Amino acid sequence: MARFCPLFSGSSGNCTYIGTAAGGILIDAGVSAKRIECALVEREIDPKSIAAVFVTHEHSDHISGLRVLVKRYGYKVYSSKGTMNALAENNVIAQGNHADVMTRKGVAAADLMITGFRTSHDSRESIGFRIQTGDGRILAVATDTGCMTDEVRSALRGCDLALIESNHDVQMLKNGGYPYFLKKRILCDTGHLSNDCCAAELPALAKSGTTRFVLGHLSRDNNMPEIAYKTSLSALSAAGFIENHDFILEVAPRTATRPVMVL
Ligand SMILES: [Zn+2]
Ligand SMILES: [Zn+2]
Image 1 (cartoon, helix red, strand yellow):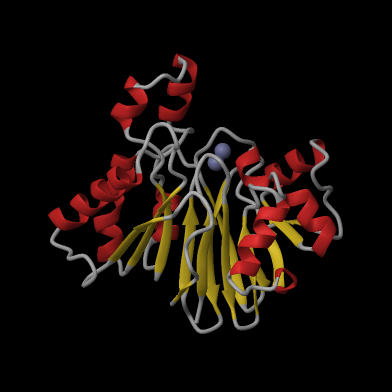
Image 2: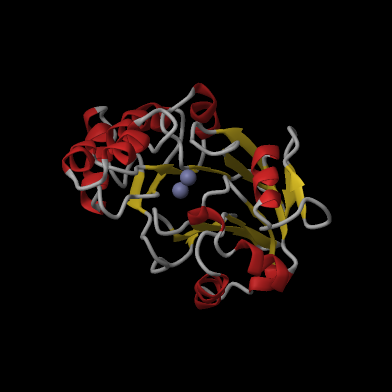
């Protein structure tokens, strides 16, 4: 059994809870420690039951609550070597007792086995995570990737649940008010994944056995939940998959409003 809840998702902050009866982990801690604590407690999850925080990369929408959480609860922190170096340089957390680099064979925490895979993003060494429970459930979290790579694809294949970035609608971004350099940054291969690029991946993933898709890290200014949802739904429907029969599709809310999902 796995418990899953995207507590916060989007450019304003990211934090996902994944747990079992033995405890849980967080993927990223990108809003204040106080808000993460409240979101956990509201869902009857004891913050003390969290074993570790797995960090995708050092951008503030993924780490802004990290230092306080670690200080308060003694959580272990895991990430890539590059991200760990960036966190140490910025005095967020120093590598040592509480922080460690992910090894190739993965890290065990709270009856979960967590492995990392490389994503394509303009940070030191961003990664996503594939998580397996003791009883064989598989979940994956892949956000902050400007393009789909074979490494990301294979990590998402055959999961019970995949949280995938569906960051922006390309037309909204192009027509919107962001400065040119920022538009270019978001659109490039090391920026963020568009609705179209996300949707294009889903039929093959559904074919591989992935049944639950959660679209995440939506841009507040260049996307709308309905557009992200419809773009992915159209791609899956066009490939012959039927919603709530072959797959479940939903959009991760920006702030903690969703109950925990059990799978
Ligand atoms: Zn980022
Ligand atoms: Zn981000």
